[in-house]
Length: 234
Image (tube, rainbow, N blue to C red):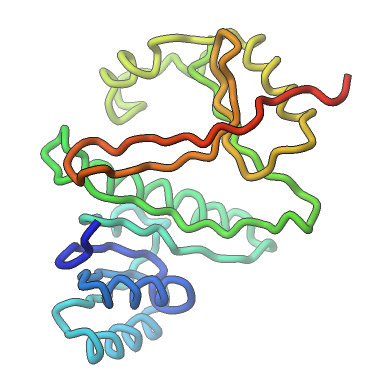
């Protein structure tokens, strides 16, 4: 993607990683609207970057990502805002998880081409715990499963028709999902991977990338297949 003239919305940009990402984007010709809950630091950062890259290219707005009414999105949305305070887990979840979910939902609605948008890019910044801590991370992603969870009503999902036609094309049994889950739990090898749960023995680990081949067509999902999950313990 050529970043010249692209509008970027970035959360948590007043300092740290967010500021570094902003400077990189600005150096490539992007225009950045950034927000942060820290007003004083945000304004200071705005002034410094406006002097370096031009006042028309950097704008700061005070914003709390836990408040959905304060979020907007443009061509590129970078959900970077985060806090680390394990004594306040509810606050950490509200900022680190819900802030990214809300930002992504708003960006998607603004960008999606089937709703008149121009397309775009959404990036969620996550800090991973290092493997030397002895903890493995996986994302377990089953298809729609025969539970009450999939019985939604109007208003419970953003696009009920899309949900019914796409998400419920095939539905797995709970027993099938549970069987695949045990494989993942008992597998002692793979780390930092997605496990796609599918019927018919097609479940697999992937490390997923989205490739934008021409800037016009829908991005291509490129999966780097990993070894299938196998139980190592009975």
